Length: 241
Image 1 (cartoon, rainbow, N blue to C red):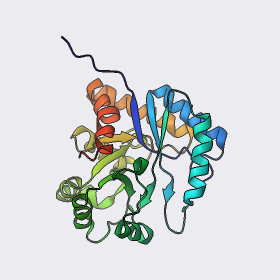
Image 2: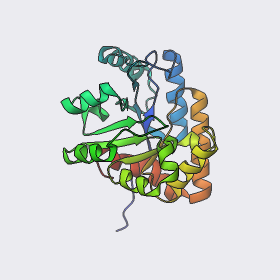
Image 3: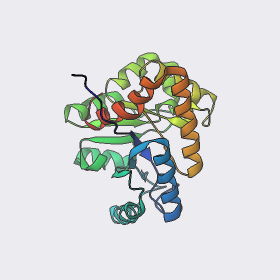
């Protein structure tokens, strides 16, 4: 008997579809339009990941929950809206790390983290190793942006061993700079990236993400699209690197 894989759809691990919280959707109409555009691309699960970034974007849990409830009410019926956060590795994050209170994907073990592009935190790899040993699953947002990784394959390998790399689709299409595009394509082509995500802040970003998906399809084929947008994200949510 031949096994027929059920059609589930794409999973977006990184988006800013919740309105009024950060530099993402401006209002409820924008949230709805973004989710509709993602659904049209084949996404059936979208995780809202509002910034948690000290000194810039630090919406309260109450504000996040209110926006989440409002957006769920107008969400395209074919999309399941999940909740997490884009956690900047800063003093607030470090405190939450010590206290075990990092905002995670639907309250599970996996969480999204971003770094500052010019330099990595001191002892980052060792810290992530400890996080992994504690049963948590770090998911690294847009690794193509981090300049120390541009020139150190050994560092890429050590960091990748402790967290899942999730590249931005728009970076693959060249919207974030030539070096960022080069690194995103390298991570995807070499199988270093576990997944790709929209990182959508606007409807225009979803269109850029569509170009990234088209590049994967043309360059690497349909199987790579499935791996990076369906299988990979689901494994990352389960803590599998």
